Length: 162
Image 1: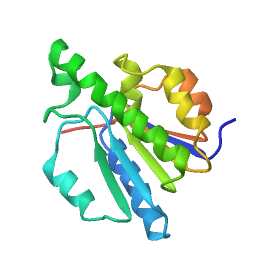
Image 2 (image 1 turned 180 degrees about the horizontal axis):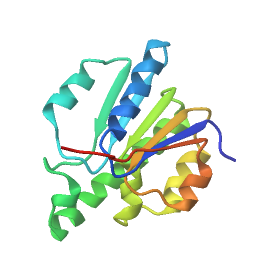
Image 3 (image 1 turned 120 degrees about the horizontal axis):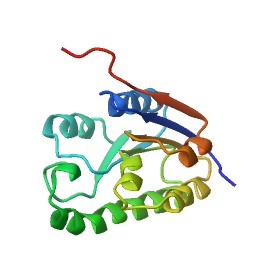
Image 4 (image 1 turned 90 degrees about the vertical axis):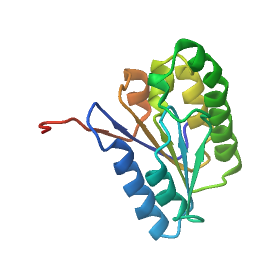
């Protein structure tokens, strides 16, 4: 039985992470503790530095070792990063099981399914141990199974880009 609440920000447009971080700031301003776990993203020092300045209310965790985004890695490099992504999932499961935070943002988690790093069942297992923690998922592609689990889904698309 799923406990907690699940919001999803998905789509091909820019701003999914920004929307999730906006929710993080909103919840932190209400006195809630927020953890952000990023998957598959390249290291963006300005974004990471800003989020780190929001500690201890908002804590950022990254498990990817390489500086570039997962999609830009060679097949060999992806294979080497996969265990790191799985460690991030295990960390998220532990955080949920122990109730270490009020809100857990799993940034680009939907991409783990797309790239075959995690299965639908792996993601569903996170929901099963949520213990009242609010969850926010982001990613480009949303599969119907995951959409069925969500309380709210926001599709972000680009209507015009210069």
